[in-house]
Amino acid sequence: MAWKIIWSEKAKQNIRDIHAYWIERTGSDAYPAKLEEVFFEVVDNLEHNPFLGIATMSVDKIRFLIVKYYKVAIYNTQPKG
Image (cartoon, rainbow, N blue to C red; front, side):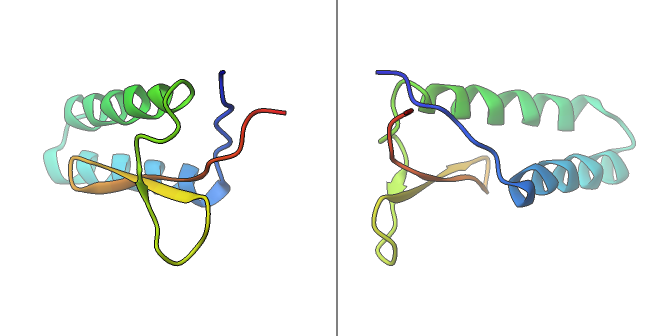
């Protein structure tokens, strides 16, 4: 079963902030572009493997993934309806 990824505004802003940080730090778009590519590959995998992430202890059905030292996806494990 395929699941749907819904990005929160905060998640979108976090990706933009990480991208901007690395452009400022390196003076190049190469590393942040590669980092975003890795983020989106991992998140795309969630559509088919929604239980890849680590379950949180505090909130039922909420999981997260860590990619390259960033917590990039915090998501709810409910099927696409």
